[in-house]
Structure formats: structure tokens, C-alpha cells
Length: 494
Image (cartoon, rainbow, N blue to C red; front, side, top):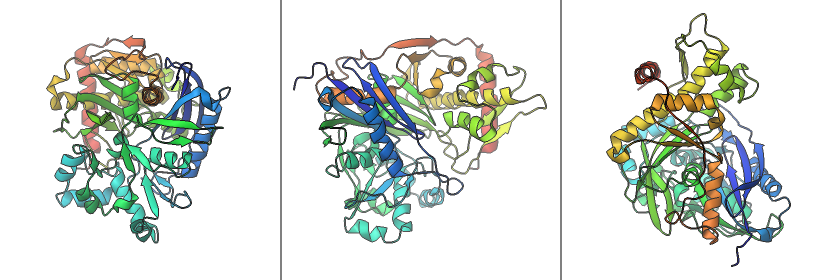
């Protein structure tokens, strides 16, 4: 097809908002639309989203981002999404049977503990690269089947469909014509064998999941059907989980390249190439992407709370009015105060994986106030990132010198990025386009459309905005990190 002058549309469905960005053929953003997503907390440790809200918002932002364009101007849509969140819906109506259970949700912690006690974690890890934790989709899906009246029988009869958010959106955008996901999202369900590249019968038996529920798994750049809901026919050509799309958007195409995304949570991915590296330090082994049937692997560290801690300062404590105020407030903190916030609001992720840990604040004195709490919340992001990079170096000695590429909303804070560079003792690179998740989704769609080259040919879409160089004395950084590690140890339950 003739793709000259074509535009690309990226749908980025995240945990706290849904956005669409229209990019030109050079991957420069031309229009953006965003809506916040309501969070539901029906019980302690439970987090849910309304699937109809997700779909309604997705259509709205796509239409807004397309303003002034005809469907014929769009070469393709790329979809990226919050990953492990589970949706179960009726194939006939397309309606969800229950609110989506979000990746942060901890209701299946006991089920994971029982499986771990039963000696199943080594097998699960060898096949999926994941650990037995409620973060992932399998136990969430099993919970839905066991707690919705009649759902398991319906699933066995093939009347229901399961998917992560990308899959649900694809189904609805294509009018139920396509039930598919991509390999990166499949890899986060704990049902997909990342070595063999297929759903795993042994895992399906372990979690008691009927195969009839499962979508087809495709490459990240592939033909995913088309939608007619945006004024005409538009092809959907790319799909990847948010952290994998961000890795592509950050052009981390070579083994050893590293990116970290700071949104609601924080996720570091290290490209390890064509062979999986299985962690000895409780990191995750995952797919970076799958293109042309070839899998590229990554080590991943997942932090559950990053920007969510700033939201807590705003919504829970009321000490800031907007998230952007946190950095300026933190810069006013008394440097003599050593306040640590361990943000275990929904447990702790890598490398601790303690679902029962809860948040705590250490080092409070009478002189500690709003500024010190803001600083502690922002510094916690850097401390957790340091823990992840230390574990990555131990797992993969070939990592070498680190330059960390960063993206996500928190990277707008110069205070946070400078402290991150100081603590890591390494450069931190912030790109000109910080919404790299959407950029990666657009890149996949453009590559599938023939508009853009594959990663082996070019990485020209990445541009540096600012490099933060470490300025803190190493002994000071080490002392601060030691205080953090002591605080974390005091919160762990196992």
C-alpha cells in the first residue's frame, strides 16, 4: 500500500488513565487526548476497574486524537495496556461478567502461598519466568471462575472469553471478530510458556483454567483485524504490554540496554537478547517483544508503587494539590532529616515479593513535615530502582556500565531524576517524548504497515532531552541506600 503521508494512532490504556496519541510518519506526536480512569477498592488489598469505563474512554480518546483526520489518513492503530489486569466476558454479548481485577490486586495472595507451599513455584518459574504472586493473571482468573455463579460451567462450554485489557479492547473494537493478544501480554498471565511460545497445558491444569477461554497469541507487530468504530475502516497493526511498548519506544534494541518507566508503579526492563536469563535474585524473566516469530527476552523488576505514592500525598494526605508540586516541595526538605517511606500499600514487588508487607514511615522527628514526606515519597522511587539494578547486575554480569533511559509521568520531576542519578551513580537519560509507551505502540503499527523499519535497521525515533549526571558523593549515596534497606527489612513479613 502507499503509506506516504500516513499517520499512526496509539491507544495507551493505563492503570489510572486512558490516552490516545496521534503520531506522524516520523513518530512525532501531533495530537493527544486523555481521560482519568476511576479506581474501585471494594475490600482492603482489592483493586478493580469497570471494563465499560475502559472501553468508553478508549473510544472517546481515539476519536478526539483523530480530530481533523479521516480514517484513510491512519496507517494503523497500536494498542498498549496495563498488563496483568484480568477481564472475563460473555462471547455473545461482549459484556464483562465482573469488574476487571487490576494487576495491583492482592486478593489471591493466599492461593499463591498455597501453591508455593505445595512446591509449584520452581515449575512455574521455569516455564513462565514469573514468581507465584497475585500480581499475575492466572490466580485472578481462577478467582473469577470460582466466585461468579455458573462462570466455570460457562467457560467449559466455550461461552466465555478471557483476556488482558488489550485483548478485551481488541474484541470490542473489532465487534467480536478477533479474540487475540500478543506474546508480551500472554507472557504476563502465568499461563504462557515463554520458552516454547505457547499456552502451557501443565499450567492450565495447575490453575484449573479451561483452554477454551484463551485468545490466540500473535506477534507484537501483526494484523489484528480492523475497527469501524472511528468513522471508517482502520487496521489494528500493533499490540504490546505497556512496559514492552516503552522498551521499544526507548529504542532499547540491543542486549544490555535498560529502561525504567515511572507511572503508577515502576518497571525496569533489561534487554538480554535471544536467550532467556532466569533470575537468581527474584527478578522476572519475560519477553521484551516478539517480531517475525522471533522472541527477544528481558529481565524485569516490578515496583508496585511509584507515582501512586505521589497520588497518596495528594489524595490521601492532602499535602499537595497537584502531583507536579511534589518535586518543588521535596526540594525544600531539611537535609538533616532522614525520613524513609516504604510504599508497601499493596505489598512489595521485586526483589522482595512480599504480598503481606504494608507501607511504613521511618525516621520521623518533630521537625519532619510536609516537605520531608514529599522527599521521602520521591526518594523511595530511586531506592527501589537501585535494588532492581543491583539484582540485575548479579543475574547478568554482561550488563556492564549503566545508562538508564527513563519515561513516564514522574520523569518530569528534575528533583526525582537527579536523585535517581545520584543514587545509582550512573547517567539517567530523559527523552524528548516521555510518553514512550504510546510511542512504542505507534512504532509497532508503523512497522507492520511498512511505514517504519524494523529495530535492526534503525532507532532514529529516540531523541535525548536531558542527561542527569550523578553529583552526590558515593559514600553519601551508599549511606542513604543502607538506611533504605534497613527500613525495608523492618516491613517484611517473610
